[in-house]
Length: 180
Image (cartoon, rainbow, N blue to C red; front, side):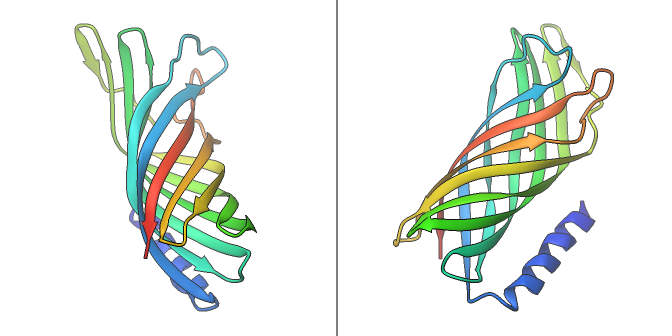
């Protein structure tokens, strides 16, 4: 995890050298997460939160890069069974402003598992989830002149977080934040 955080900090410092403007921010919101897999049935959406910080590096009026560091709760539910997965997520989003304030974004995300637990009636087990997850994010958002912004994105897990069967994360995020 230290290498991932170091990578994000290095990326921020290298990109900020050429940026026209730099804005820091905070964000929080809700996650609507589930798992994807070939033989996975009855996997319902599990809600969680995300919270963290970001830096938006604007290179032009239309294009910016936005590295983030987030605490993010994912998982899934099925009846009374629940899988909880807490991550430190490091997305790096490329943003393109279609109109003033309105942007579309895409980019990679690396996540490091910090907590996992499977609970069922009468049992609490360690689910043996991989400690590293890689995904691709796609989304859009709107920034108000006051600094308040909202965004939504889908994070598509690429790497399997558990094998036999292969399970991958899927997460829809709704966020509210403030840039200063």
